[in-house]
Image (cartoon, rainbow, N blue to C red; front, top):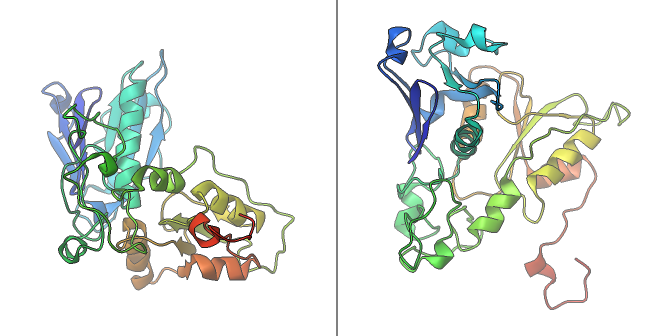
Amino acid sequence: MATVTAHGATLTVTAAGIRVERTPMGQTLLPAELTISPENLRGWYHHAPTRTSPGWIQFSVSSDAGHPEDTVARPLRGYPATHGVPNVVAFAPGQTEAFRAAQTALTALQGGYPVPGDAATAAPDGLGVTAADAADGSSTVGAAASSADGSPQGLFDLPNPAADSTAPTATAPEKKAPGSARGQSTWRRVAAPDVLPEPDLTADADGPVFGQNVTVTGDFEPYEKGEVWDMIAAAGGTVGKNVTKKTTVLIIGEWGSVTSKEKRARELRDKGQDIVLWTFDEFLDKIGTQRRPTLSEVKGTDAPF
């Protein structure tokens, strides 16, 4: 469980979803509690606080989730506009670490990865590792609450079960999750860079990626997510961090379970949105690029890596 103290509220993120609890003063203008399940989280807008100015996170949820209409509104501009809005969590000037911690936890939840600090051993609705995966021993589950030597693990430290003798180990290499023995390197690979690349408008306009709004999900070993983003942009595509109503393509990398992004894309497609789902190999084929071999594939050979 990842818990952050914001301005007038406490934000808690777990595999089960998001809960915002207002302080007594915060309840004078806003509902005492806001809960959002992972399947209803469309994404969030955000503005980071500085030493002298406030910041905020504005959640966007599915319109059919039973939340007030303003929870699916466009991003608000300026702190006065966010004041008193139920789907906004405000951060006071100087609360930069709390803001970053919230962003880390939300990114993990939205991406379908174990939430740092969450001791749950299985995530519902296809997030992270499912109970079925745990049952057949095909992948690692959960994140240790403490390290092997008994020292407490930081709330937002990335899990490293390799140092935890009690953590189960992965037995199926094709099912990788951040909780596996290679969890930290996998996390770095799938972590989203801070800056989105701009689409190359000089790319082939007849190419299958040109003009598309593309989001990626999963692991693209040996590529990092930023490299995949660069390939999309080089082909003239617009990269999106989350699946939204603008998304036209979702590229799916290997993962131990269905991520929340893939689940959201399928839901939108079932509702009539024009979204196509490509595997990473299909994407590489469409842009005319061969997959770079992994280290394990060339180890012991004369092939260059």
